[in-house]
Length: 139
Image (cartoon, rainbow, N blue to C red; front, side):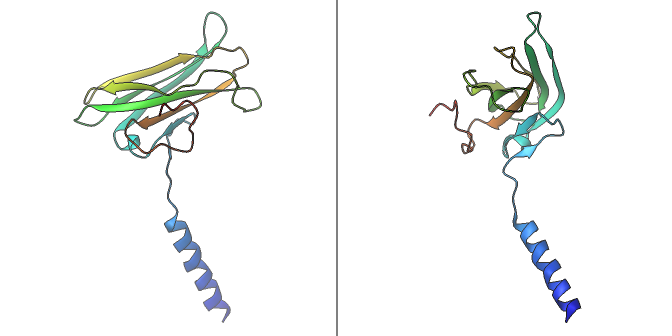
């Protein structure tokens, strides 16, 4: 009976884990979040951060559109304070760009506050379903 119960627990746990979906793909670069559709054709090749000449956090990423078609992206930089909270008042609007087929691209931005110590870059397909993060999305 104990073996049956253990086997049943394993099957249920496997089924539950197998049914979960990941709507957002975390790139191997820890500060970059790729939407589910964009992750099919975007390959991030480099993530970088540093400070500008005015001592503000500067962040960016390089990537490649691996598709043989032109793609349209929306992206957003989110600036975080030393506690990991988003810095209020910073404009963090979605921006749009068009990527030529099989071409490299670069995204870069400088924080507008010296309180910014970390960042996240969210990259989504322009035509994908809007995610829960609605701040700055133009309707």
